[in-house]
Every structure is written in structure tokens, then in C-alpha cells.
Length: 66
Image 1 (cartoon, one colour):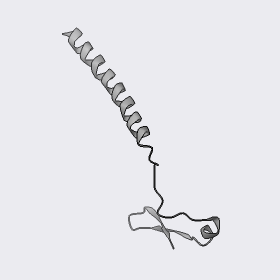
Image 2: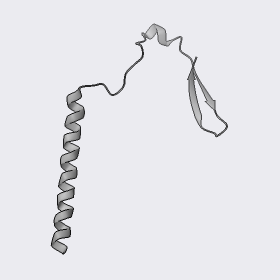
Image 3: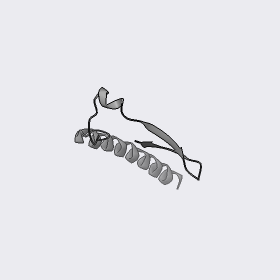
Image 4: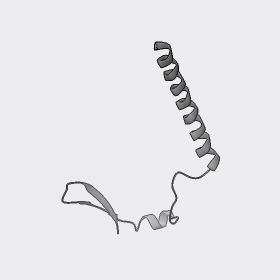
């Protein structure tokens, strides 16, 4: 009984490692960026962006672009 449990544990562990490996290959093969930008801003445009922090009633802070 112990041998079956040990074999099952090793088998699932190895399948997990193989799954992580295949998953990383899948994401790498898509060659997509991690995030997309709606538009590109030059350094001159960045000076006109103002970030205002607000605190909601629950106490969590959020930032708004204006």
C-alpha cells in the first residue's frame, strides 16, 4: 500500500513539473507582450498628465488620471 502511495505521489509531482514546463513554453511561443497600451505617449505628453489619489469610503486608495 505504501509503494502505491509513493508511486502516485512521485507520478503527480513529475506531471506537475512537466505541466509547468509546457505552460511556460506555450506562453513563450505566443510571443505576446505582457500588457498592451491604448496609446503611446511621448515625454512632452507626460508633463500634462496629472495623477490624483483619492480615498474611498472603505479606506482603499485609488488613482485617477485627469
